[in-house]
Length: 162
Image (cartoon, rainbow, N blue to C red; front, side):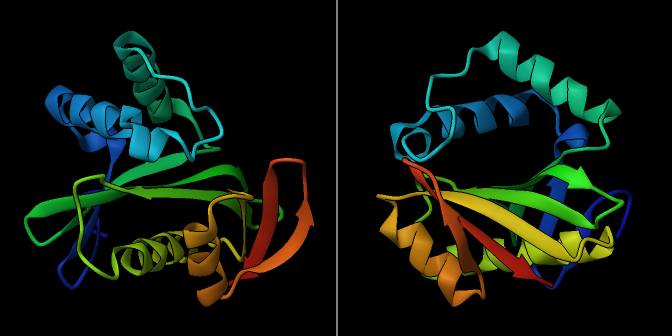
């Protein structure tokens, strides 16, 4: 870890708190892109003021961490840990690749990044929810060691020990 950044090889995870307003606005645009928004738990368009307020709140929260992930000199996606429970060493993960990134293996790079971040925080169990119709994400999670723990009407619940 260097100045809050998590670096391994050419991958750099930059906490949202370290990003400037222009970077955060770009993240909001990616998140609001229909190719990303469709798969989110909250699939509404996020207003600028709400996004700024949320990003600022991260400075004071212990239950969530959000990162822009760069490969070399370009951003490739966003990863996050939420519902961080330090007592039980668990958290829920989320991630998405930037809609314009078309490099094969980007999902796997994002998964490895969030696993490294979780390990540095002492987290031993990661959980996630994937929409039942999101077969591509489900395959990625299965491939990276997640197993199904339950279902809701709209989501498959998965978990992995690190």
